[in-house]
Amino acid sequence: MNGKAKVRVGVIGAGGMCNSVHLPSLKDMEDVEVVALCDLVEEKARRTAERFGVPSVYVSYHRMFAEEDLNAVFCLVEPSNHFHVVIAALQAGLDVFMEKPPGVTSFQAEGMMRKAEEKDRLLMVGFNRRFIPLVREIKKAFEARTRITQVEGCFYKYGSGAFDRGGIPAFESDTIHAIDLVRWMAAGEPVEAHTLTASHQEPVTNAWNSVTRFDNGTIGLIKANYRTGGRVHRFEMHGPGCSAFLNLGMGGAQCEGLLLRHDGKQQYSLSAGAAAANSGDYFSGVALADSDQFYRFYGFYFEDRHFIDCVRSRTTPETSIQDAVKTFRYVDLILAGKH
Image 1 (cartoon, one colour):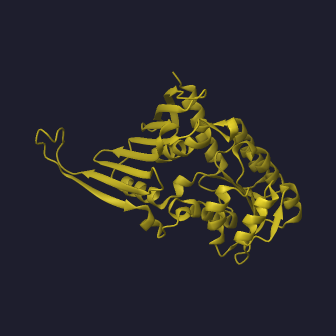
Image 2: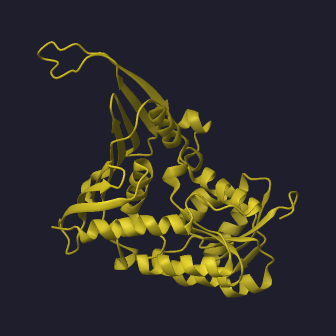
Image 3: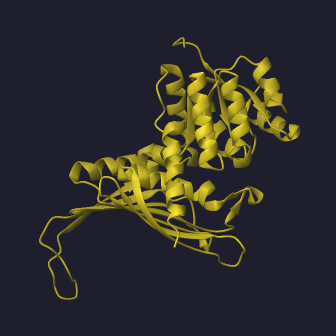
């Protein structure tokens, strides 16, 4: 598109993700104009539109597509509604950003992928953890020193294993954030998984623990439990002489990390007087993002910026639907490996 023209965006879904992270991100971009907002609850849409200065409000996204001159759409609806909204937007010839998960099943994800390819449109999935400046910087520093041989990701909460009013398990809807980031950190494709699950205090599965072997030899661990003491979201990377620990939440919105290096002889026991030659570097997510605003230091602004840049340049997004399908197939592999 014309380098000076603003990208005209329509947003579908005026809920929490829209108000807390995506509209604040888009309104920070001088080359973006959010021209329309759609939600089934008109009053909710009007309140959000007034807050962010969006000129047009709709309760029908079909009508919004027909009446507005749009370049792209942000689909921020519940997971069970993603498929039909995204398919309609692609059919209308629009580039689409959709929040995770990419549908409620890999069947839906693959269908959206085929429609995007048929219409030659961009479809990006909101796996924002990959775009957190802290995550990218620590991975870069780690790989400059050694190769990653083991990755671990966890997501603990106190909630339910049934998301979207029971329409999708928490594993596919929420833990998929950790699954995608583990796959990205491992830099390979999973070939084998072994999984144990459990149900605590409710009739649905709400705990998953899995170990994966990737095609490059890296081992991945996924741990999720939705009956714990609160929100914990942590990741680890390990390799010869180096380990990284990322805290993306310990009861709050933390964003920090430690890169631990071992430069001396092998160490077995501190109590036995073994020589230690460890050093570490602390990383602040707030400092790396140059902002204390959650939507910036937690990656939402940067994923939205990436999508807009791809719309302008006609390049494939990093978290394209094609790549997201691979993450959903990883989900399927984990669940198929239950014992």
